[in-house]
Image (tube, rainbow, N blue to C red; front, side):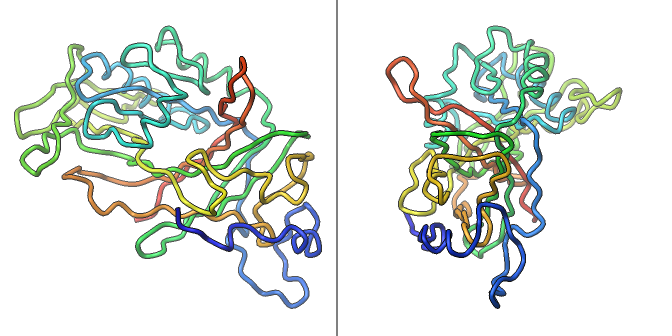
Amino acid sequence: MKKWSSALLIFAAALASCDKDDDNSSSGGNTTPDPIAGLVVKNQSNVLLVENTGAWCQYCPNGAEIMLNLAANYDFVVPVALHNNDGLMNPSSVIWDSIFVQDGFPTIHVNGEALANYNDAEATALLASTEPAVMGIAHNVEDADTSWLVHIKAEFFQDAIQKNYFLQSFLILENVLAKDNSAAGGSDLRQVSSVQWVDKGPTGGSSIWNVDAGFVDTTPTVRAGDDFYHKDNLWAFAEGDSNMTQWGLPLAAVNPFGSDYAAGDVIGSKYTPIRFHIDKPSDLAGLNVVGYKVLTVVWELVLDGGNYVYRYTNAYESSIPE
């Protein structure tokens, strides 16, 4: 992985320069711009909604409609699609599959819990959103020519003692046209459907919605005849300091007090910066992509049944300005 020396500071310098609270003002003549100045971390439990899906899956339009509806109606919902055995499957989605294990297609997970009935997604997500947030995160995304720089801020709302948190950012393909890309050397991403929602479309063409869907009050976010897009597709994970793994950077590595945190702690100021980079895709194999997002997730590494597992804690997502 590429190394960004500014991602980690010497802890002694951090302790000498500031306390654990965020300080966006200049100190001692230091006029270094703060990349997270003005960034607000909300005291909110955002709900990670993950769907195991595939363009070949005849019932997955059911899951797509549920994901579309919840994302359109609730600002706390963070939707992610994990594609299997089609042109949107990639190394990052395979890694996530180890946590978000599917039991048939589609499978919808709420904060890591696979639902026995994906029609329970809304009620389960609403309940999960009421859980008090231990911590929250936010980020700014900076265009750096061939990559995006992600500057992250983390804030604690409760004490957390001896907790192993990991931060990681991911690139999301916001909308990918469900089109047969085989003529361009890609794959056929037309959405197979045995239900009313979607018409697969002709060879060389693209899929369309058969019905209005994704209602907000009485207004649909898509209408019958609109192109069908595969939405919110996990594509790649960020890189950063050499301490990072595929699951991210140990937060204790940038916290002057290690793995102990107190309510009110803010990490990610200009004195304790957290910066990742995501390379811009150079070859999308004929994919018709409309829009990108950056998703930042905080995981907690916990011992479960004799095995260490990563559990979802909170997330923040933003679109990348074009």
